Structure formats: structure tokens, C-alpha cells
Length: 275
View 1 (cartoon, one colour):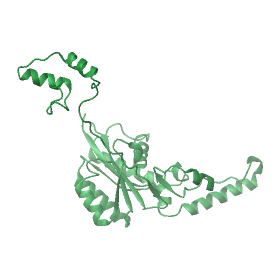
View 2 (cartoon, rainbow, N blue to C red):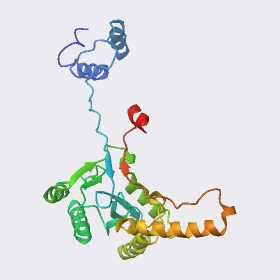
View 3 (cartoon, one colour):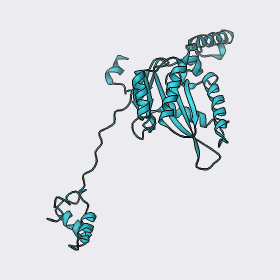
View 4 (cartoon, rainbow, N blue to C red):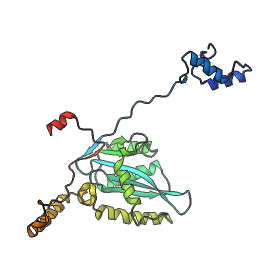
């Protein structure tokens, strides 16, 4: 017990102590005997100090309109060469689901990430209040941090290994890769860029997104969704007047959400009573 309690051994496992003593030319007993002695003394728990990590803050972001919160991520695209991938950078507006910027490159690079973000802000002529991302090396890099600090854009990060903290980027990647036209592998960088140009044009301007009342992301992003909603209501009202027997109540088109959240806080009992 005195041996196992020595300062230099106090935080080592039994195997470490046994091996070090054996290397010094001393055999005390077997490892199992050391464990038995510790167990009889009630000291058979983990001897080494364990790393402790404070709980990570859950990112809670809300957007009530376009260009308030952007989310970005990088995904890999398979090539015809086994083990070689292209890297697709995509920035999406959380509220409208509009892809405000994207780029396909041969690799992941922090300076390139900075350029993609800077270009998206310049082309959209507006900067978001918050830019959310996971904790990849490019996302947490110094060039990106400096750019956002210069632009006065708040940085937000997902918790480590929590994919649900970046749901809009993840969902957008799923829509991309489950598209029937998505190639199994890309022949060249030009092939990947041509496909993404066609896909994101379709996604922004033609795809009716279920999360935004079946409007296109471009319509929501540029503020025409309310006019489209009214036109849909007029069409449904006409159908209702013409064939009232086909409806149990006045039909209404899907509504555009007022607010969009990343990790919406749980409702408090007082909130439920007030509603």
C-alpha cells in the first residue's frame, strides 16, 4: 500500500506501477494481488485523474426574417478516383432557406472559406447578424474569425459532435444528395461545378420548400411570398365557391412561419398558461 501511495504512483494504474517497478528490477507481487490489496482497502476505483469538461452552451438562434441568421458547412463529393473528394462549401439563410453562396474546390482551406463568405456577403449586399457553423477547422479558423470580426458579424458554433445544432445545412445537404440527378461520382471539378450551378438555381427558384409554406427560397428571401400566398388563397377561394361540397371548411394554403429557430427553448409552464 505504501508503494501504491507514493507521490509518483498515486495517479497511475496498477499496470503502470507494476511495469515501472519491474523495469527498476523490483518484483513486489502480481498485478492481481495489487488489485486485491487495493480492493480490500476500498481503493479499487479509478486512480487516475479524469479530464472533466464543462457542459457546452446550447446554441439558440432565432430568425424572423431573411439575412438575420446564416448557416454554413462543407460536405465532400465523391470523384471517379477512389479516396479523392471535392469539397462543397454552402451558405444558407436559415429563415428563407435561400442558398446565398456556394463553391466547389479540390480541398478544404480556411482562406478559401473566408473568400466564400466574403463573396456571399458582397453579392447579397447584406451581411447577416449571426453566422452559424459547426466546429470544423475552417469554421473556427483565424481568417474566418477575423473577417467576421471586421464585419461585426456574430459567430455561433454547434456543440462538438452534435449534428442537430446545424440542422438547416444538414437538411440542405440531404436534399442535394438525395436528388435523383445527383451523380454517384463526379468526373471533374468542372462537372461538379456545372451540376451545383444547375441544382442551386433549381433549389432557390423552383423548389417548393415544405418548411416555408411550400414557397421557393427566393420568394421568401426577396419578400414576394406574401403576394404568392394571397394569390394561392384567391385560387382556393374560387374553388371553394365553385365546389363547396368538396370542402369541409374554407381551404387555406400552408402558412409561412413567423419565426425559425435553431434549438428553440422549451416552453415554460408559465408560457403555456399564458397561451
